[in-house]
Image (cartoon, rainbow, N blue to C red; front, side, top):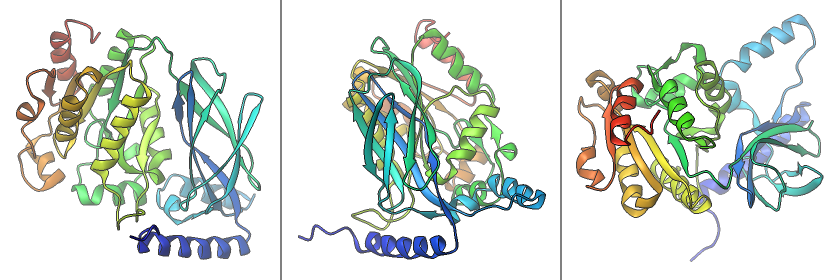
Length: 347
């Protein structure tokens, strides 16, 4: 059996290298895009991307143009990744080296970092870029509860058919045009306030290219700050496209292994496969799940999500008898049910 990556992955890397060479010849420069990482007292997971960006004019027109494309996601998809680029990561007084993957992404684990718990920063820099400060959440060893949330149809909605959401959000609209689900931000704050030190993670099948827009949306609508665990579109080493469901399953298992003492509140929606994925995790890791909270889509939203006006799965049948499982159409309803189910610990 061949150990080479899938042919589509090899073709993608070949094309990316040619595109990178072409843009470098046009004078484009390297830039590090910082993502929010996380860790514990034992490790840090540092995430970023190195890509090429154009040299913008310092004229007023150049500044206006830069601001316009910054607010439109299509620019993120047109920039060229720096394939297998060498980077340095500075953590306090320590510097380590790492290499981006064929998409320009950095996902590096650092041990013995000596950082205190709470929000910290590390610096990532390529050989020809300016340094970029990456926020990292160092989770306290005493944390026993955490919150993991989906994004699309759970904290925001666009009222578009699911196949069009990614393209519309990324290429056309900015975050000011997206709608926040009523009560969800307050729900999250109340739960986290009830458990001081509890970490917040956003787990989505969305592309890393939309990171900046999602981060601004969450900030503008007062959602708690936390790492975003997104995915890269395109071929993998074994197939044509990445599986969003597998991304969520793998991320849940990874968090369970990295933080074995934390019990998670899992929040999603019934428009796609969140109930199935969360139920599987609850069955396989029952001590890691405090409860599952599912936002119920309206019949119209169900049609936009998958073409029918009913949920894809019956959550009650999937959850089993040992998992606390609540459902409501918005954050206010979930707070009310969760407070009852958890004996008031939801805040």
